[in-house]
Length: 318
Image (cartoon, rainbow, N blue to C red; front, side, top):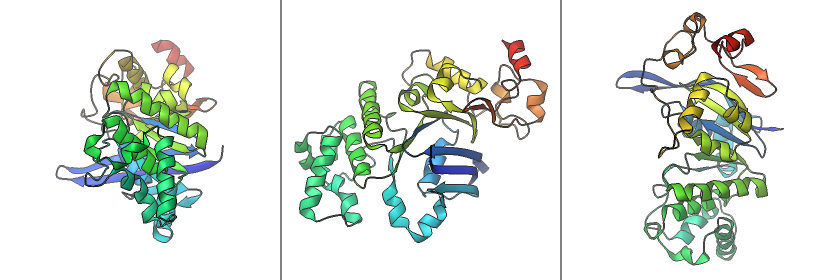
């Protein structure tokens, strides 16, 4: 599959009142053309920072982010408008992304106006098409955001994102603020968009079941870096990294947020060795002194774990 988006050794550190926080640490991943890649991890893993870096809302301290083979920084310096058209986003809180003073029709048409697409007549027709694409009644064009449900508001955001026919849609927790009954509808809409338009997506969530629903591949992120990567079914059904296994076991318990693992990343992250050691049930001595690399265990399925990469150790821990 041809690469659309590629991150290589990306680092990002934020300076806070409590000192520097390394949010992203030597992160590498690829999104192919037309592919849906799910990026999953609990709060604080760095996944939303990845979204902001890809969208150009933050700048990496080190490493490279390339879109269509070209550095994102170069895109933003020389052809920002073209990049903004090609890479669109859907965020977590649907109402916060919409101007409460504007009607739905204006909100959906706004990207077309900003990028000077068509005239008022053609834009009005395009708005009608986009409303149909996201399964919204065309009569809603005259409503204000506060007159919409959460699901309707998120559909408006998706319509806005589709207006410029982007190549990549970055979805940062797009269903987590919605009622459970609405989440599946929005996920199915995104899956429909991917299939009908061959539109690539970087789908970010804290919930492994949500990511599994529509992802071709899944990248599991912990403490700023990828710890497991592979086909969606492989990662969710046959996880190899202890952290992914923790996510799977947590998700098997019915909870309001699809299951969150016990323990948190608030526990001290070691500066040497594997960063998951304080929470790992199968850690060995080597884990505390030497950080593992992301090794391929099967075709297309990689894990950053000394135990997972050693058949003898895997058998020993069961």
